[in-house]
Amino acid sequence: MLASIKSFTTIATLGLLLIGSATAQADDTFDSKERFKNPAKIPTHLINYLSKQPSRESMASCQEAKPHELFEAELISLNKSTRAYLVKPAHTCLCNAVTCPVWLLQAKGSTAKLLWHMPATRVVEVLDKKLNGYRKIKEAYTDETHGSESIWSWDRVNYTEIYKNAWKMDAEKKCRLGEETIQLVDGKMVNHTIKCPQD
Image 1 (cartoon, rainbow, N blue to C red):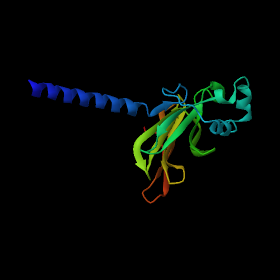
Image 2 (image 1 turned 45 degrees about the horizontal axis):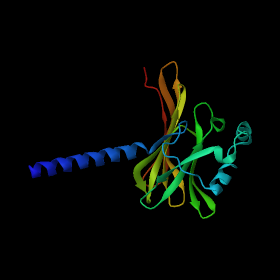
Image 3 (image 1 turned 120 degrees about the horizontal axis):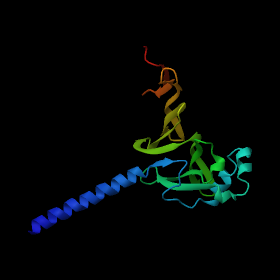
Image 4 (image 1 turned 45 degrees about the vertical axis):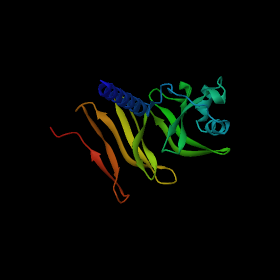
């Protein structure tokens, strides 16, 4: 009887750990148009840096909002000891109809260190896979007529693009046309054209 209780407890504990792990992995995908689930307070010097980044036209459309109200962030782990702020607009006035700008910043003393930035994207995923100690980043956006996705890896200084696929829809043939760029093992970038299948 005691053995059965211990076995049940072990199974239950493992189940909870698996659920917790799945939840943590799900939280690593972010939609730039949706609120962060676990927002973090952004340091003042990061706000000062960010307030200088959007275009003047965008800032003018947000003139009623104060600088610290324009952005929101979530702290993410790049490895066991390194965390950074994933930042996006808190107001749609800094976005277009489909995408928003996104920044990945570290607070280094009283300065802001930019690790990665996308001027316009929809979905950002911090991948489990690492390169040079930091997790890779994937971003993508899509609508009915076009879209793109890219993957970025850490080169010990900043994040660099190692994969990109940009496409547009061929309305007549109902397929995607585009360019795909891939980084090879030796670091060389190669690209090829994606065409519609021949009839």
